[in-house]
Structure formats: structure tokens, C-alpha cells
Length: 509
Image (cartoon, rainbow, N blue to C red):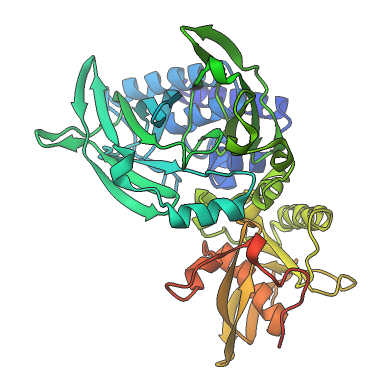
């Protein structure tokens, strides 16, 4: 039986995808996680039950570092599809397909530059954007975060409470550059915290609106300033959208004798040195440090750090001794635990189809149990500890909870949901592996009844009380896209871990 040219082109795309996936040693589930899709979607594309989309092809090539092969197969398929449809512009998105913030935006090139100046630090971010989605884009989310003492979170937290970052001092400016014509962009604050801002850059200004339509490209640029009293010796870039090329430049004074190094983390690897070398060249009394990478994986983070060897020790924000201290959250990030602010922690987990997906469920639980063993090497969890699959970048409804008694077997929760709870509750301090630098006072019921699945798909109800009720409820929140801060009483502040006095003690009942 023969197939049509478009079907053969789709088969060719699926084969190319499978070849590169297996060449990288990735399962379909792992590839889907790195790309930000439900695992079933990758299976459907390789099985050709779903047609490939442009967004899927670009992200697959970025993750698999395919050097154009997957993209070329998609173009062959896409040209045939357009010809069959009489030149139709674009097929509709696959139902249920996840698209990153920005309705399918791809960053084709980013240049981030940070300059040390007399009045502080000047930051300029320039991004070339492509709309690979199906809807026009009218806004773009950016983040500004400061950390005066990155190796001393308690001190940094107190400093920013007393000296909060303000929008006025940022002097934020944003522009749209379309073919050499610069247009100012209006912006609107989304979140305003002492050391963190989220800002919508709007594709509009006083002269009108200029949305980015599907298939179009545009370059945007935004710039801001931060005083040296609020900026520590680090500059981090996080890959939140599919990105083709990322470049970073530090512009520092030669007279201060700067020393620069860098680290990177991703969902699939622990913290390690940058895989490509930072290049330095001096010009007119300035030391320019350039670093770049192609096709960085989604959710990767790249941090450049420095110290000034000609600066007096008492003026240097991070002395050699303090550099030995590692933030608690960095230790968790280093073993692969997704940190607060990542979109993965706000997405409801997918339910297993048991017993059909028993093998998948067991693989996920094995990874969770392995992390519990690693956690014991990093911290004494006297209150017990739990870990949910989304905290490892796995979008499945699975969690493992170990009671305070380390001799007890961990509790495995598959597809859990709370079906009843006691009317009585109390408030206790909780920590979270996804932002381990703080503790928060959280109200919880003293008893919960949880319906959950067994490996064969049957469901049972288990009651948990006191400490186990709190631990289990915390993990179920993760599976529903919630964090414990969502349950805290408004106005109650988080406590830096350095100021928390109950580490090593169990909860009291």
C-alpha cells in the first residue's frame, strides 16, 4: 500500500526525531519533559498520530542539538501540507498542546549585557523573538531580581527589607526594533517585591498597538539600572522559552582586577562549570567578559559570578570565607530539584492510567526515592520529608513521603486527592525543597483522608494525622500546582532559614 507524499514527509520527520532522541539516550518521557510537553504528545508525534507543528519542531531541535536536521524535515513536511491546503497559512494547534508563556514564542537570539558603572550596574537585554504559536502576542513577561549578598541569604533578605528595590530607581526603558525602526514599549508591573519584580512589556505605546502575529519576528530591548548597594557579584540568565542562541557580556573596570567564573544547572544535570569558556579582552580600561551558547535546554540557568581582587576586603560583598557558604536553595538546585519561580511548579500534574502505565509510575517513584536518599546527605529532616514529581521536572501525579522515623517505610502516593479533613487545624512552620532558604507558618488540618491509587489501578482511602497529615497535604499541594505560601495567612512573612530556630526539632502536638 502506498502513502501520499505528505504522509511520507511526516514519517520522515518522526524517524529523524526518533534517531536524534535515541542518539542522546533519552526516553520519550524525558524528551517531553525537556521540551515542556505532555509525554503522550511526543509518543503521538513519533507514532504519527499527531502531525508535527512548527513550535514542536523548533523545540525538539533546540533540546536535541540536531543542527538543522529535524527542522529541515519539518520544512519538507510543512511545504507539502501548505501545497495540499492551497497555501493555507497554518494548521490549528494540537488540542491540549502546552505552549510556553507568550503563546509559543521562540527566542532566536538573546544578548544580555551588564556594565559596572560609577552609579551602579546598567543592564541591557536584547532579544530577537519569533512567534511560532497560533495567536498574536501583545505582551512579554520579564523579571528583574537582585541579591546583594548571594552567599548570605539571611543578610541579603534583611538588607532588601530595609532597602527595597523600587521601580523608580530601575528607570526601566523598553523598545521594539522592527527593521531598524525603534518604537518605545509601554510596560506594566505584575509583581512588586523587595528584591524581585515581574514586568509585562506591552506591544503598544501612545501611538498605537503593534502585536507580534504568528510567523512574524521582532527584536525587543529593555534596560534598567540598579545601585551597587543592591546588586551582588552575579548575573544569571534563565532559559524560560525555546532559545536558539544566548550570549552574555560583563563589562567591568580593569583597575579592580576582576576575576570571573560561571556555573550552569538544568533539569537533567547538577550544578557544574560552564561548558564553554568565558572569553576576556581588555579595551580602554574595561575588562569585557563574553560567553555564549547555542540551543540551551529549557529551564537551564547560567550564572556568571565575579570578585574584584583590587577591592578592599571590607568593601567586597563576598569574601573568600563567605564564598564557601552555599545557599540552601542552591544545594537543592544542584541535585536537580526545581526551584520556586519555575512554571513547572504551577502546573497540575497528569494522572497515571493504572495499571497500563504501571512501569512509568514505578520509574517516577524510583527517582523520587533516590532523591530522598541524596537529601539525607544534605540535611537532617527531623520533621520528615517529602518530594513530589513536579519538583524533579516530572509532570506526573506521584509523591513520596518519609515520616520523621527514618526506620519507617516511605509512603507512596499515586493520583492522590484529599476527600475529607478534620475541622481542627494548627499552624506550624514548613520548609519546601523548592525554596529551601525560608520557612513559613502554614495552617493545616490535624487529620486528612486521602484517596489514592495502587499499582493495579485500584483506589483506597488512607487517613493521616498530625505530622504525616501535614507532610502529605504539602505534597498533594505540589501535585495540584500549589505552594505552601498560597496557604499562609496574608501578611505573615517568611523567615530566613538562618533565623529559624526549630531546625532539628520535630513539630509539636
